[in-house]
Length: 308
Ligand SMILES: Nc1ncnc2c1ncn2[C@@H]1O[C@H](COP(=O)(O)OP(=O)(O)OP(=O)(O)O)[C@@H](O)[C@H]1O
Ligand SMILES: [Mg+2]
Image 1: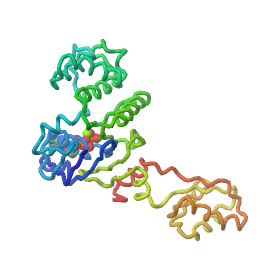
Image 2 (image 1 turned 30 degrees about the horizontal axis):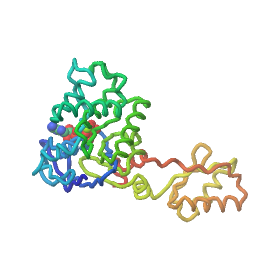
Image 3 (image 1 turned 45 degrees about the vertical axis):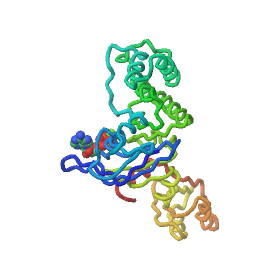
Image 4 (image 1 turned 90 degrees about the vertical axis):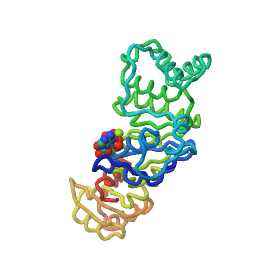
């Protein structure tokens, strides 16, 4: 549903997007993850036909953003990172305004606005003025606005930014529901764990380049071959550390706070091999704790250039 090949966009001397290629299949939720200034918004704006790329090609729902921007616009719902609302309008009027802008016939508009209000859980505040909405409500309204023409593809720029945990869960549920309805979603975030559990695949972007992409599991496997374990012994730590250094696959051991911090290149099922020499020498092992290897840590390593 979304295909990009070698996208480049330069502003002055800055290469905001520097050869980005990606594919997002129907029904996927693809997370575009990167720090501030990485080029997420610029890429999304190119896909949304709001910016022309200097080089490269992109198509959305099979239509070229260069040659057929009108068709792309009909196929997408785009939610910018910041959007203004027209003050004075009520929530339902706001949605109706956009339905009218998409030239939906009046009779159909009413039904569509009802559907969107229900889906985004804004029914209860349909009469509220849009300028009086909380950030969470506003994000849901922004999403709702993208849905009135029933697009196949959603391009969402930081849909969960600035939301409290509860509002974030609401947005997450809504995005899940939209994916269940068959929509293809490309979303961006600069916080890796914010929505990554929702994503079928993620791409990590920095300085305009896509450093890695794949399922969250693939990223974990591919980018963090080594794992960190904390081995705690009740006593004789230096002896334990020395024994651990001799285990094949162990690349580094550090003694810290009564624990041996072990860097181990091996599968989870091989962790027990670390323990054998310790047990043989009757060292009092109290715990072996694998450090969490969530995407955030890997993302940090990737963006520090350690793994790029
Ligand atoms: N209209 C513009 N004019 C000049 N420079 C721009 C423009 N838009 C973006 N840039 C620059 O391009 C780079 C990428 O910006 P972009 O907004 O795409 O990043 P981002 O990943 O969306 O960051 P953020 O997480 O802060 O939203 C930055 O260096 C930014 O300053
Ligand atoms: Mg941005």
